[in-house]
Image 1 (cartoon, rainbow, N blue to C red):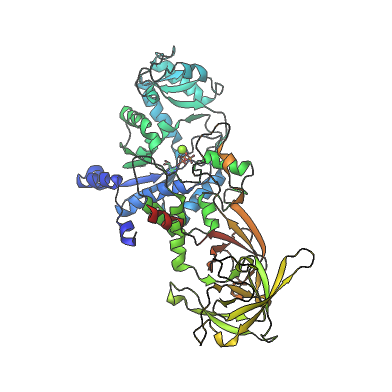
Image 2: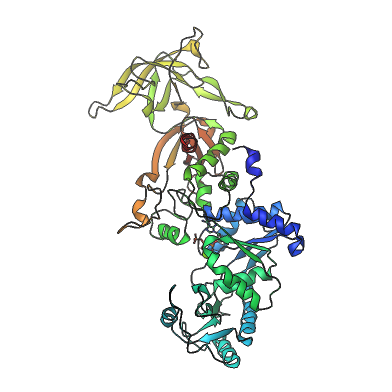
Amino acid sequence: MTENETASTTHFIKAIIEEDLAANKNDGKVATRFPPEPNGYLHIGHAKSICLNFGIAQTYNGTCNLRFDDTNPTKEDVEYVDAIMEDVHWLGFDWQDRLYYASDYFERLYEFAVELINAGKAYVDDQTADQIRENRGTLTEAGVDSPFRNRSAEENLDLFKRMRAGEFADGSRVLRAKIDMAHPNLIMRDPTLYRIRKTSHHRTGDAWCIYPMYDFTHCLSDSLEGITHSLCTLEFENNRPLYDWVLDNVTPPCHPQQIEFARLNLTFTVLSKRKLIQLVEEGYVSAWDDPRMPTICGLRRRGYTPESIRNFCDRIGLAKRDSVVDVALLEYSIREDLNKRAPRVMGVLNPLKVVIENYPEGQVDELEAVNNPEDPSAGVRKVPFSREIYIERDDFMENPPKKFFRLGPGREVRLRYAFFVTCTDVIKDETSGEIVELRCTYDPATRGGDAPDGRKVKATLHWVSAAHAVEAEVRLYDRLFNKPNPDEKEEGKTFKDFMNPGALEIRTGCKLEPCLADVGPGYFCQFERLGYFCVDSKDSAPGALVFNRTVTLRDAWAKLQKKG
Ligand code: ATP
Ligand code: MG
């Protein structure tokens, strides 16, 4: 897929908006919003919605509001509000001065409720929650009218005011819309609009003890903000008639159009705040920003860039039917971005010492290395070479099988940017038999990595000079789940039974090129042959570097494409 193809991505929502613009609907304005509930951190699914809403505003010269849908005081927290704002900004979007909270509308919403009551379209119901549920009926049976359904407007208004004043206990009464208890859509069977919750709210404190329900709040908040297109995920399709009913039965400033799109599902991933919060609270991961998490802050700490996430959201497109996107596409997006931008350096994550016996003690060669073959402007750097170096343990085999072309006894290989070396001896620990060191000779004529006599070697290894190496801890991350669909129901199991125990492997004592001595959070690079890595933003410190592996170099997506 080329840049141009992604940039020109079009989809059914853009088609609707373009039609509306052509008809001069909404005076030719486009206003969207991103409406998170501050009850958890944002995840990659939210990124899809953010890119869609803010992206549409950009494309059509419109506006996009950030609105916290904070109507449930029991689950919400300022910690989440702050994190959500940080994540939206980090993704590259800005709501400017249009930061709103549904809780700012509580007074207006109350007035709309009073309007419904006065029009005989809402009533206070004294039934218990259980009774209300029982009397709702089923898909095949009509519901039963509440015995309180025909209260007079005066009585309803009096009770509603007293609900607000705190006269009644939690759960003892609700305000319901008076629609139709036999409606084929169960959501329309006199839905609850307000409930009593004597709980402090993170913004309104104890000013309210009745809280409006989502379906009542959302459409009216949209209207109060002059939203033209209210984009939401498919699970709200059945709520659309209620969205419209509320707006049709009060006098709102405008009537936005709700349009549903398919939510993002990803293989090997769960995308539900309810489930992600369990992973955090039950200690399966270290925090919301654990680099294994599909949260925006987790992906950021893992080394994903905003560009890669935006490109991913472009690529997956927008559909009306649910589907599952291969997580390999997300990994491809970051690999593609970092391939262009990440400097290449050498790091040995599982070091094996090599002594080059014919290299003079105390001598250091400064060898020239290319910083990024994809970007000539990145230039070159010097890498020190000396008598003792480290190579990757996996790059040596004492008894190499047929297809192993790297180092073995008597074999010659190239050290990247440096020299050809030949293994002359293997030193082992006497008791354990473990290989602890290799002895090699080098050919000074191959400086830079080529033999003047034209002889070839079958492998090029990365390496780090022992005397110059920077020590680091490297955390190798992998997919958090080992089942393609961890959400799938299985007898006696939950998604937590499918966690990948190998999703985090910690390597200490890694040896890195000396140019990394002073890097800090925000730094990312490719360790040649191993993958893309970044400095951990929380645990790394000067002198005690911690790197995270963002992604390996193996492109599972390209493979899939070829097979397909
Ligand atoms: P979750 O299911 O993870 O708890 P939610 O829908 O309850 O998410 P909200 O905070 O209400 O989370 O979501 C804010 C916006 O993000 C909504 O418009 C919602 O439709 C959208 N959104 C949430 N999850 C996804 C997803 N997986 N794909 C696309 N959009 C999503
Ligand atoms: Mg929600």
